[in-house]
Length: 238
Image: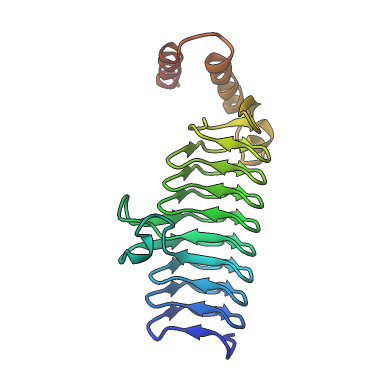
């Protein structure tokens, strides 16, 4: 299960059934959960914590130092990854930085396709899909079930709402609301992510409420304050 050419620090903790491919490097302080598969030539940086049943494809690099000034000199920062995530070739996931909470957090059941970059201090929820070459700047938060199309670039400190869908090559410099579809550059809201919501088990009544909220925010020419007040009233009623 562990190739003889792999280099694993003496204090690394490997769960039952973990496999490590040829020429993989696992640095000090790493914990790997049961049945996780680490492909050939993968690099796992110090202090990284991986849950169970993750798959790291060849040449992925996770837990490296933050790409910020002085990031390579920081100690005590971590990357935490949950269970059942698939991380494809040449993905880079960095540790947190002392400028934030010192940790980058990845949830469960996520799919990161080739060349995805997740910078320091990001928080990614569960069941997300980041398509090839998606890039998250530092401190970005991605909600559960969000899908980010190929070559999407998200500016630091932005929030991507749950179950939103961003088409390929979207350039994001502001927060994205939950449940919506957003197109390319400049970002244009197309409507709610009806297909994605149905796939994730949202009922017809819930879709109706989300559609009404969308129309209130984007189609009724209300101020942001008035739209928020209406939404609060609807939540209280239900």
